[in-house]
Image (cartoon, rainbow, N blue to C red; front, side, top):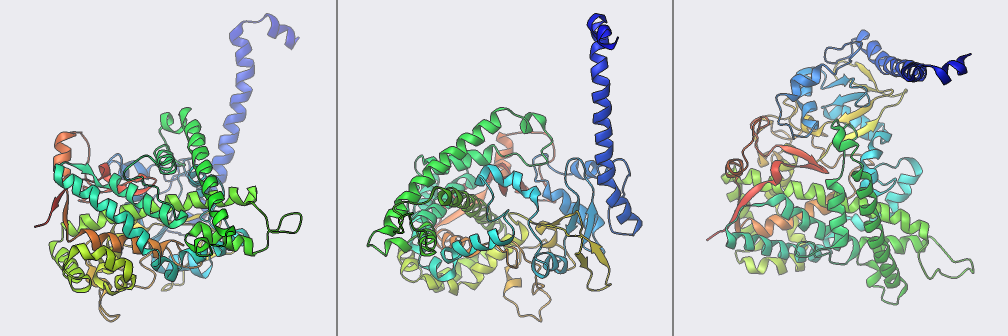
Length: 553
């Protein structure tokens, strides 16, 4: 009888017959998932755990609109959590946040003691929620998302290429690319044009990481390079996991472009790996230790990867090449993206603090000499001079404190609770993503006197001075076993860049001029800053940091 009705009944009744059960199943599924997501927060609230006002149906979704309407539309979402931290994390410097179905459950942390517990004492794992972001960039599981023995063995293989002694010997690579960057800036100075400093610096830092990784120049500052272009394109197509705009998130072109860019990067890296393997296999042993890629191949082969005949392999194993390509893509992304942003913010803060700029220039004159044309060769011949620039390092650290390029994320465990060192209160981490929001922690007034001021001197005072940083409160590279592998390289890049530029150029942001040419409605400042951070891979200055460059007399 039912099938007879379906055969002869009105079409809308047939549709209704199938649609209603499907709708009921979907509704039941959503209710079940919502219940599972909300119940942990109900228990936490009943236990008196810190959190914003919570709704049993909407969780903390009602909190976000009030915060977002005070921010520029393109500002990074992390800054919303910075504002929330000041509002709801004052007492404990942490709080719980329920944004289901848009985000996983969060425990937002803005205190050094809780960050130390998560990253150092318990060394919690990297959560799976990070993988969708890194998948298009790296192409697979990588040093940032791996856990356990796989991560340990992979890190051990790459570590020799990032140690301090090895990287000091690579200073000539950085200087070589910096000389091209100087010519780019001189060209803009001659043209007296307005340009994006962020974009110019991204290509520059891409060339550096390419040279150090491959011992092969990419020349992306001056011409097309397949690898660099594909990586920059991949970042432009990136979509955050909680992207709400359906036209961006479900754009059918995006996965096609991500596959295409990944294919281009893998092909390029595969050819470089083959070339570096030939160098390693040759009698030229100097060639086999000139780049991170060479060192990795050498360590891999020393582990004993023979051919089936028992002799040394005459080519790299495809599985190794695939794994290495994934890690190298991660290095390319992380090694150029965050360093570029930090360089731009150094210039920004120095422009608005002329006293600090003068101290920096005086230090460079004293240590490197006043003849600017001699500086590049001097740095190549005596890279240890870069360790004699304490004020330069203080400027870099303070820029990274005020404008961190990223934050830290760890996954909670049923057996781990973060403890308040003063009260002894325990904060459960089970099912939580522990988000260490660097922007909130590194401007938290509980741990940083005059937190919003640019004060390089805080890095030069002794431990008895109130300005002296609290242990674990500065975390741009994170701490613990999973700290940033490339932090030494990043600091070296920025020191060389400042040493070669600040005495030759005045680099000034021109946001007022940019805004007149590109008028728009809406909020254009975040907590007084026009160069607020936006998400473009990592955190970058808004609108590409429009600037003008002039040659100093």
